[in-house]
Image 1 (cartoon, rainbow, N blue to C red):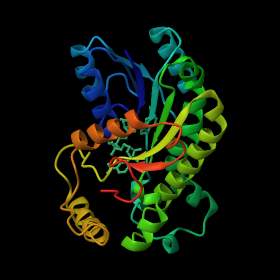
Image 2: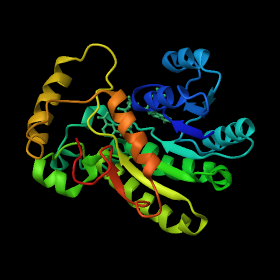
Image 3: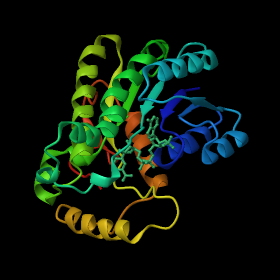
Image 4: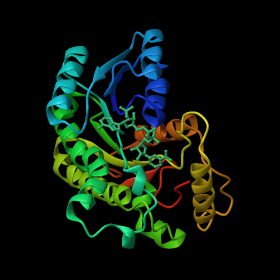
Length: 267
Ligand SMILES: NC(=O)c1ccc[n+]([C@@H]2O[C@H](COP(=O)([O-])OP(=O)(O)OC[C@H]3O[C@@H](n4cnc5c(N)ncnc54)[C@H](OP(=O)(O)O)[C@@H]3O)[C@@H](O)[C@H]2O)c1
């Protein structure tokens, strides 16, 4: 019997982690969401007695500490695997190149804020809040969902010059993961940055701008993977990611790996 906590579980990849993990009735699954009424997750919870939905905002230290306390009350103070998946971006500037960012300190900070708050600061607060539970767990694994958009080789080869705050935040996440891995290795705790692939998590019909952006990205990504046809579905991303998490050990702790289990094939 294993226990898992997943942040950002209301939709997309986070909710798919919850769906696949809760399908095994031997697992105890803790879905951390900002809004307990998020329709996708409350519907799942009503069909799975082993799934518990907990309120928690990773950008608020008090809120995520309370979420960890609520989790401890359910699991008896222990947790096997923490998956920090939450992410937010400033959509208005997501496709800006670095030279287009404003010469305005306040505006620049505001553009970086959602990504840094969820990925970098949120990653620290979530990890530190759940660490006492992980220390008492059996598997002792902490996973931060990162992105190949922070892989320097991939940026160079594909020419993806936009998505600056998101990529910078994920690069920070990757460094933090290695720092945590170095600190926590003596306690037998493994920490991984995991890129889930290029995944279609848009809900509903895609607006024309998004379809156009996806076309541009596909052409750029094909520079490294000519056979790539498009985004994968959350089911495939999470199924493969869970295999990578299952294999996580002291050798791979501290690395950024893709859902394919390596740092060469990102799609
Ligand atoms: N999709 C891809 O192609 C792709 C590729 C590489 C990496 N990733 C990474 O995979 C992860 C999941 O991506 P996704 O596509 O599934 O994203 P998504 O559909 O946008 O979902 C993001 C999740 O983060 C939550 N979130 C946002 N702000 C939050 C906050 N302040 N506190 C707590 N939760 C918050 C959202 O919850 P609310 O409903 O409360 O807003 C939502 O559940 C992210 O870390 C992303 O960077 C995705």
